[in-house]
Length: 147
Image (cartoon, rainbow, N blue to C red; front, side, top):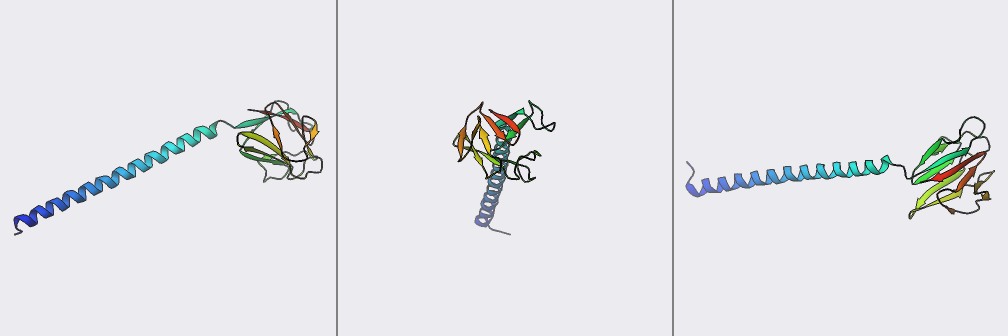
């Protein structure tokens, strides 16, 4: 039979182990809750697009005025299937234009396309800041930037 000091020590060790178990479970629950909250916050941010390109003039019959494309922070436009926005206009290069959000402003950059990228009728020669309402011309398609 264990003596009294040993029984007391065993009881203290059991209570300590129980406290560690509850601390571990509490930490796991807190981490899961924090991750779920972060995921919900991120989902609400991605649910609303950062900006859109709204078609003003389409090419032939593929695109109709009023159709829109949601933009990502970095949006590649061209004929190739690897682009964010794929347009089948023959006047558009496979990697034609890049729209990117930097420090709260939208930038447009021509990627060396044969027919060029235009903003409000002027050819884009270097990365250029575009504002809401600006008209972006790519091939035979005219699109307006809308926030």
